[in-house]
Each structure stands twice: as structure tokens, then as C-alpha cells.
Image (cartoon, rainbow, N blue to C red; front, side):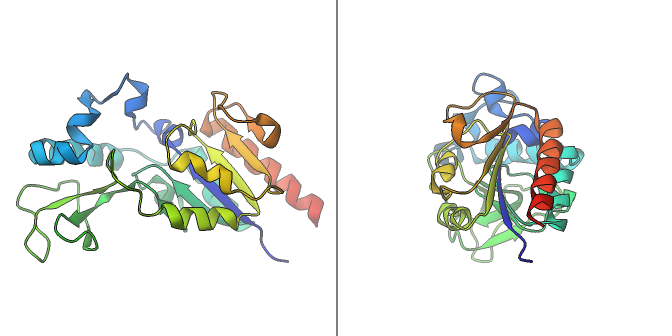
Length: 234
């Protein structure tokens, strides 16, 4: 029997339960920083040292965090489904939980890329990316992060993955961050959509199975629902 393809869009809410804060939790600040000062192309031009320091702090926070029950439950679903995670998060908690197919829409905290040639991407060993760290062509390395105001290169790939889903789930995102939030528009009409979030989103709930829970409670419940659905099909 063909395994159904489950596509899961995850957002900041799932990582927040592992202790990783987001700027949306604190009135436009991210751990005391204004977003426009650390997460925009203009910020990089104005003060690259501040930007590098900010992401070094984020990297240390990610290193200290651990996958939570929601991450683990999504990884466990690979036993019964063909699972692809599309995440807005830059941390590696999905991978550390055991998920094998993860697409990072907004970049990855443990990668750096050339400021001269964006195709040159490098893994960061440890937590530090510093002034003077250069690519093979001699240019300063920057965080491999999609900053505010930049295009999302992986969006087309994410759309194609979404179109092929047999099941679609949304976990820990309010569906207000675009273009990622638009992915639900590419889910085929007959495909069930599961939504796990403590806050009711601004979408038509008649089209979704809504679990008004935090990710750590809601995702295991969703996994149970999916298991029951699978048994009914056997």
C-alpha cells in the first residue's frame, strides 16, 4: 500500500516550546533587538558586526535547546507516512528530533553564505560566525537567513511539495507571515488540513480540522487522529 504524503508547515510556535523566543512575542523586539537593526539587508550594510553577534547569540540559544514532544511526534509519523516538513524556523530541532525531509523556507542558523556568490553555502562549525570569515572567493560570509525584505528562494519548491500532499498540517504558525502563509492556498481541495495552534487563525475553519492547542499537546493528538484515519483505510 502506498504511503500517503503528509506535508507539515511549521512556525515559531513549535520552537517556542523548546525555549526559543521570537520577535512576535515581544512587540517587535527579538531578545531586545529591533528587527530592522539585525534582520534586514540594510542592517547588514549598516552594522555587520551587530548582525553577526545577534545570530551568534541565536545559534547559542539553538544549541542549548532540545526538540520537544511536537518535534518528536512529527518525526515518528515517518513510520506510517511519507512526511515532508516545510518550516519557517531557522533552527535544526526538526532534524535533531529525527525528521529526515525538512525544507527551511527562511534559511538555516547553522549555515553561512557568501555575500558575493549566494550559491556558495557553508556549514558553521560551533556557534560563531565572525568578521573576517570569508568564502573561497574572498568575500565576507553572512548568515544563511532570509531577511525581511528579501525573496524566499525555496518558495516555489515548497509550493510544488504542497500541491502533491495527500494530507496537510499547519503547526505553530498564525498564518500571517507571507509568503509562507499562502501555502494553504495550494493544497488540493480534497486534501484534509489539520491545524494545531492555541489561537484561532484568520482562515475558514470549515475547511480544516482545528486543534486549539499548543504544539506539544496538539501534535501528539493530531498523530493519534492520523493513525485512526489510517486504520480505517486498511
